[in-house]
Length: 96
Image (cartoon, rainbow, N blue to C red; front, top):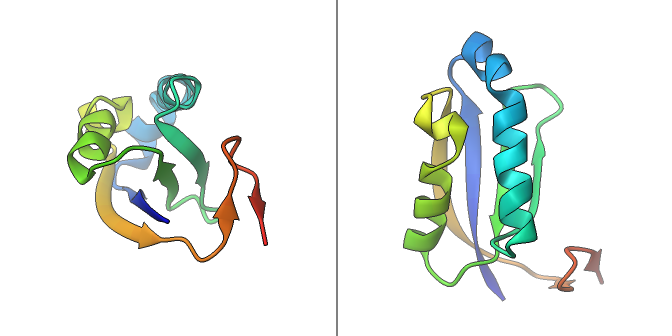
């Protein structure tokens, strides 16, 4: 199955730390709405990764565009269509 993913590169670390709770809250709200399947930061603090549960690139871009990290220009988003080679259940738990 194909998914839309976003790579987030932190471009303003200081400002990003200031809006981090808003960013996390926004993404958690999108998970509750069923728009995001998985998300998380990179361990080197350079940004993060989102797997969207939407049908089109435009939907993912619209959701990401309302993220406080996008609105405050603290992260740069790069979108890709990604083909998952394992099955992912509806709760975001990956299995072989």
